[in-house]
Image (cartoon, rainbow, N blue to C red; front, side):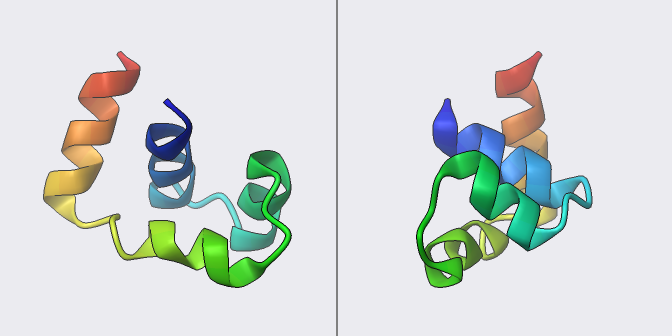
Length: 51
């Protein structure tokens, strides 16, 4: 659920620094990993998981 939330948030325009805080990441590098997974297919998957 945590990963889905991170992907969903960043895929819907939540600024990376805010998502970093929400996810409790100490490093922005950790949060940036979620940005690699915000393609169309991944976003659709995350949205299905959150519905």
